[in-house]
Image (cartoon, rainbow, N blue to C red):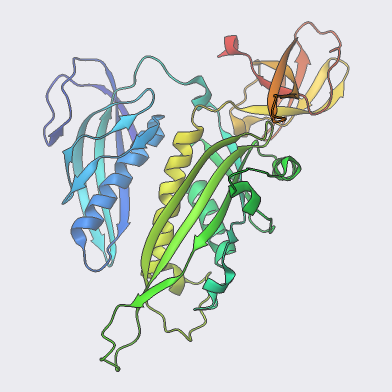
Amino acid sequence: MKKLLTCVVTAATWLALSVSPCVNAQWFESTGHASIKNNDIAKAKSVAIKDAITQALVFSGARVSSMQTLVDGVLTQDQLKINSHGEIQKIEMISEDRHGDQFAITLRLDIFPEQEQCPASNFNKFVAITQTQLKHREQARMGQIFDINKATSENLYNTLNESPISTRPTAYFNYPIRVSEFFTQQYDYSNALLEEIASRSNSQYVLLSQIVDISNSDKLNNSYAFWQDETYKRAYNVDFVLFDGITYERLWQKNYRGQGIWPFEKTDLIDVYSEKFWGSDYGQTIVDINQTLSYDLQAAMACLETQGKILHIENDKLIINLGKAHGLEKGQILNIAHHNYLTDAAGNKMPNFIITLNQVQVEQVYQQSAVTMSVDKQPLPNIQINDIVELAKQSL
């Protein structure tokens, strides 16, 4: 990803979305990638352009809630909606390239930031990527892909880890957990499980998921052509839900559906960690869904607050679980809050933060922790381990 500050007074050359007066613009150069499926180059080109545009928007700090309509690789209708501090003024195509079944396209985008920005977007949010669960394990019999839940969770972790976004994943996909109650209408889930995952992974947020459908449809080839290998289409339907590990609130939820060609014979035993699997049309379908999920998750989390917990108290000093990796810097002021619940008339518990008058200043910063000191160098009254710390608004 390349970035260049410049000023633009002319209209767009290749593709203009609007014409603006001379203001501080940010040029971003990004490369999008896509797999060519069924020799459909036009579709691959459109997907690659979408990928390049989304990367540039995410890198610039914009929150993307929808993407442009792309036809034959050319943007024909502006359906872009950016929730905060970002607007595309011009897009130019730099190059396009094809290597085998992979297509790449490089774009140059002129993005004008708006005046109001989301302060929270300047800080990284850590999210625990848990092991997704198979809702119907019997559907994994074809190919004996009973470990697909672990493999797809690892792929999602790697996708998020390689993306230039402020949502930072932590690996929690080696531990099987029960997630079905988190997707019921009653939301009768365990707060204790969320707290355990958040604590063990040192992550404020927890992403849970379940694979709803991996069934196969009718075979694609002619049943009378008995000499042909059997080829099927197979579904990939997965639910995601995001929770705050501190307040236990459900923050975001979405379902993703896809279909890919299953090129293997019914009796084949498929290794879901192999290149053979991930290089197949079905494997690439899962990769595409995980890539889309990574962008959607960034949009959902961009303006969420970065909060931490107190790990240790010693007179006027506190050790907290926020550090350089979160964007914390020496000298910043933090508020301290108590966390409890209010109960409504129906018996539902609602999170409640009580902001105290105590404030601390960051004295020493490490990668995942920091040492803070009371701003008035006095002992901190009524402060306990696991109390919440968050950046004071005036320090931003």
